[in-house]
Image (cartoon, rainbow, N blue to C red; front, side, top):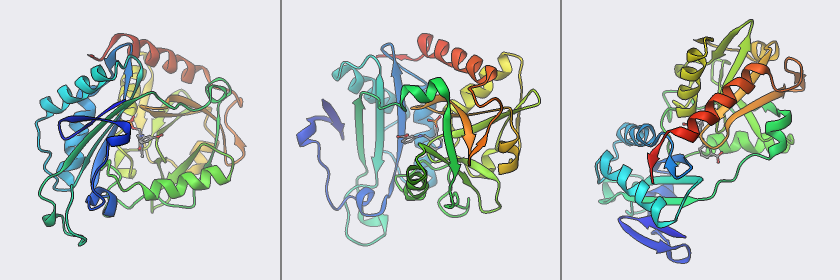
Length: 288
Ligand code: PXG
């Protein structure tokens, strides 16, 4: 494996950064998780744009252009002969002193890891996933805004631990008003009486790239898609529920807090969207 750090490639054993990097000390940095399918990087431009937006929001100046970043990602995939895989792109604040202030960090670090992907078990895609609601709330939008894909994921990790403790792979996170925001690493959708609903981004969710793609695909297929504040009740009475994420793609959900969703099996609309999503991953993306 060849790992890109600041323009150079390192073997896995030698791919190391400073213990004084504020990415490690404070979670001060931003990242992206990107998929490659059939020797193409899926939605690369969208991920790079979001990375730069995240960086802008935390006043982190990435030391290269979006175009150079795209090239570096594709080149790292090429160096690792990636055909299907997962790319982790990280920009840290860089090494500095032990104080909080980013002023002591003169040079941000850029890391690109191109690897194989660890998916949810196949059984989950076949039979659907069981999820729970976490007691841990999604960050308030005036704290670390959930739209920023920052290296500080502890909020989500706390909810993920709750999911694991309940024997689940994912957990729903509510915002401080009690509305559904998203899951720990996936956005959430439901189908109710023929309309597809997903929480508005202002509810406190990552501006999911898969979420966007699925909204477009659903509308193209003639479905009505609405962004609406949802409560747990709305989820319980839905006919279908599914999660979206670059890693997860589209995951059917069949049980929430022990309530059976719809028929208890992955729904027809979810299946149709999965099909359309997979078809798109076969034909689009930045060539490696
Ligand atoms: N919400 C959150 C909080 C995320 O971190 C998504 C939604 C889905 O966004 P995209 O753009 O990928 O459709 C994410 C991204 C993992 C893992 O290992 C998942 C993400 C990030 C880091 C790790 O499951 N998902």
